[in-house]
Length: 493
Image: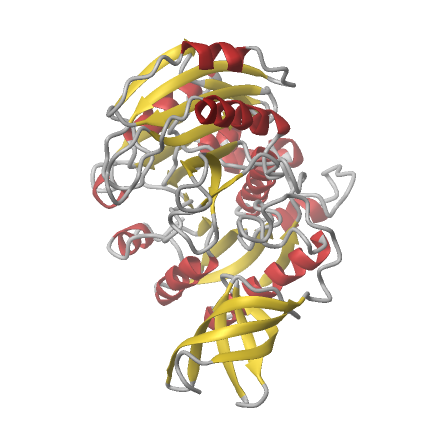
C-alpha cells in the first residue's frame, strides 16, 4: 500500500472511538479511518502505512450503510459530524456502543464480570442542556455564520439553525443572534490574525425548568451597543424563559471559551435546574451533565451499585422488598430493609472529581457523610451553595487537586466514587486512591479507553471488575457513558 494513493473499500466494523476498519480487497489489508459507519462503502486516501497498519481519511461515501434506515434530521449533516449516527436506528446505535464497550473491557478484565449492555437516553434528540456555538464563516470571506465547526476543520463554521441536539428555544436564540450581527456586518474573531470581535455564543437551558442563560463571548477589540440585541432576545416567543443575558469578555489568543470579565446585560448570571428532586444553581461555566434526563439514569445506576455494596442480592432474596419490576434499579433507601439501611447510614463516601456536587447530593440519603473533592473552585462554591439550598447537611466539598487534598483529609472512606475527566485519573493520584483499600469503588467514565487504562492498575492492586453498564447519554453521536462497580476481596472494613 502506498502513501497518498486512493483506495475504495467497505467499513467492516467501527472500533472505539468511532474508528472505522476499512477492508481493501485488492490489497488484502485494512485502512483505519475516523468517522465511519459500519457497512459504508468509502473512498479513502492513505495517509500512512506502518507495520501493516494503514491510517487514512475518508474522501467520499460511495454507498450508504444498510444500517442507515432513517432520514437525516438537519441541513448540515453529515458535514457537521456532531451527531454522526443520526441516520441509524437507536437500537443499532446501542448495539454498536455495546460491542465497543465489551471489546475494550474484554481486552483488560482478568475475571468474569456482569455486563448490562447500554441503557437508552430518555430523549434521543433535543437533550443537550448546554451548547457552545462559534462565530465564523462556512467559506473564506463568506457571510457571518453562527454554529458548529465543519468536521475535521478548525476554521469553517456551519450555521446550526436547525440543530436537533438542542431544544427549539436554543435554535431560536441562535438565529436571533446570528441575524442581529449579520445585519450589522459585525466581524468575527480570526484566530490566525488575532483580530475581530465575535467569538462564541454559549447557551444553557434547564430541561426541567425551561430557564435559559444566554452568554455572548467577544473580545474587547470593538465596542457595540448590545441593548437592541437584548430587546430582540427578550421579545422571542419561547417555550421557556430567558432568565439572564450575559456579555463575557475574552481576549485569549487561543480558541477557548474563558471569562476575563463578565457583564450582566439582563437578568441574572445563573439558571435553576432540578435533578432527581433536588434544585441546582447552574452558572455559565460550572459543570453540569449535558443531558439532564440521561444524568438521572446514570445517577440511578450509581445508587444501585452503592446499594449492591451492601449485598443487594440478600435483601432482594429476603422477600422483604416490594419492587414492581425486578429489572428496575434500586433507586433509594426505600428499597432497603432496616438491616441494610442501617449499614448504609454508617458509611463515609468519597466523591472524587465531584464537580458541582450533583452526585454527592443525590446519594446523600445513602451515607453518614460524603466528602467531595474538585479542582475547580467555582464548582465547589456552587456545590456548597446548592447543598445549603437543598437542606443537605452531610456533604462536605473541598477545592483542590485530588492528589494533594487526600493527604489533608483525616477521615477514611468506606466507599469511593470516581467521576474523572475524559482522560481518566492522573497516574500519580490513582495509587493514592487505591491505598485506602476500600471494599468497593464506583467508577463513572465518559471514555471507556481511559477507564480500561485505569482498570489495569486497579486490578494489580487487587480490585476486580464486578459490573458495568453503558448509558447512551449522547444519543446519535459515537460517545457513551459507563458506570462500573469494582470490588476488592480482603479490603479493610
